[in-house]
Amino acid sequence: MRRIALLAAGILLSVFLWAEDAPPEESDVSQAGAEGEAIPATAIYIPLKPQFVVNYGGAGRLRYLKAEVAVRLADAETANAVRHHMPYIRNNLVMLFAGQTNETIGSQEGKEAMRRDALEEVRKVLKQEEGIAPEAVVGLYFNTLFIQK
Image 1 (tube, rainbow, N blue to C red):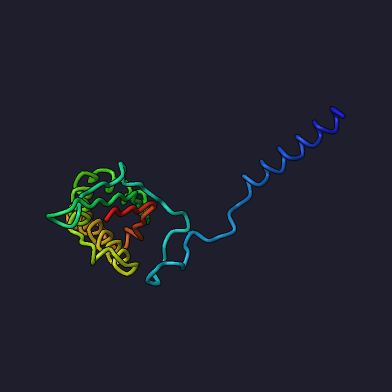
Image 2 (spheres, rainbow, N blue to C red):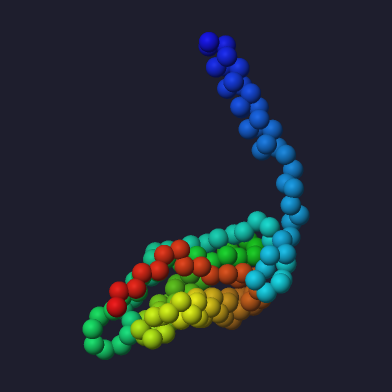
């Protein structure tokens, strides 16, 4: 019985190690870009931590928006630039999120517009500070989005 268990463990280990050494079947470039551009097959995601928690909607009743955001980047150089300029990027996103109203984020289209605006803010900072092309920031995603009206 022990021999069978050891044999099975050995087979599983060798299959695992063989699968790790196998060459990747995909090319280095994927054609799945949102705007048709070629993007690296290996995605680099950087979470913009900590979560964003802002009051929005101006005077009157307090309304809160809580968002966990991540950006998808084309290369390591862009990832390093995002990390370096994180305070500037976070500041611009806090201002963007705090400037929302119930009307602008009350619908799916409004949330999508806010996501696109946030993506443009990140691209703007990296272009202005580092001269990085906008397409190097492939996407911006809300991992969580909580709105208390």
